[in-house]
Length: 216
Image (cartoon, rainbow, N blue to C red; front, side, top):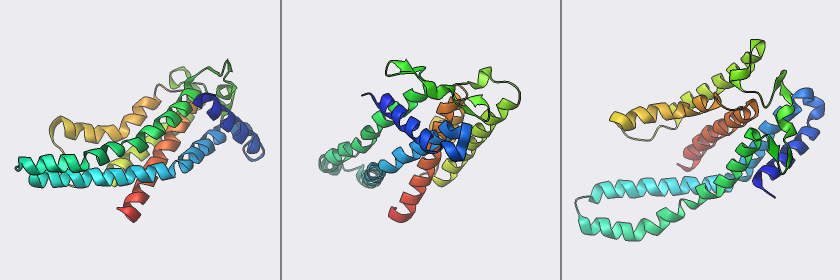
């Protein structure tokens, strides 16, 4: 079974469970809850990634200290190279999960059958609807999601800023713009995918802030 099919079954089951309190918005609520459930299950992977990031930061700091000593640089590369490579594994583990969720919310069919999740609505807006094809009061739903993504980007740019001076030039410009890339992405996504994007980016900011605070 593909990751998208597994995600479809998860969201469908959750929508059934929360149909009473959320009514017609049950599938939208299930997307949020399903995304949170997956991110919660991936917490051990996220913690391993955080530790790997700390290790990389330490290695780069030591490289800066010994950059004039070629022998020391070579010795550090031999000692830490394998650890840095292993540090990429937690990120690679998450990719299939996130891709499965994303594909579910942008595909008209899943596992050979119609993706009925996209026919459900949130405040009257089909979850498969795009901003470009939405008019009238329904635009407020997309506007709210874009505002949430912008707020998350702002929080990310302030709370998750790397230590030290900001980079200059092109790198500096990119570091200021990248936290808001999700806002631009959401302009071209169906409502269901935008809900997923809002939830997962908000989780990432919160998770990273907590990890840095308690395991910095």
